[in-house]
Image 1 (tube, helix red, strand yellow):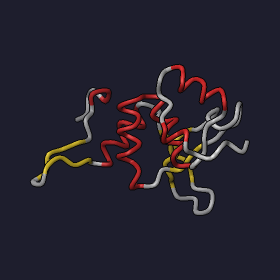
Image 2: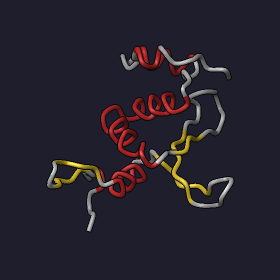
Image 3: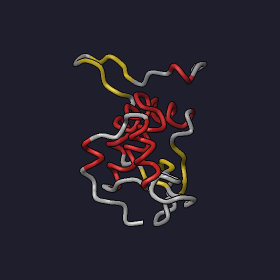
Image 4: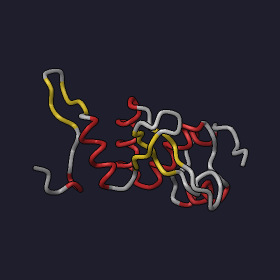
Length: 124
């Protein structure tokens, strides 16, 4: 039974070395309120999303679907950089810089990277 979700590590040792159990990563991301489950608009199937509210435009409710093969990248980004990891992940997924206030915040906390600088400008 899982008792302390804050310390949950989704990496397990396999015969070829460590690998991630995506199910455990999803549990941790849900616990951290980094992801949410919504019905997919086109199919009504449950889909995982990351909230991107205020990342690309102020006061706009926004979310980014999470492709299954991105669960590990999202987990690692948030585990390593917290909120800023989530923001960077959303920007890379959208292939778009965040709004100017987020750029300034990322620069202030020394999290603005050449990879983010190379993204196209925000069209909003």
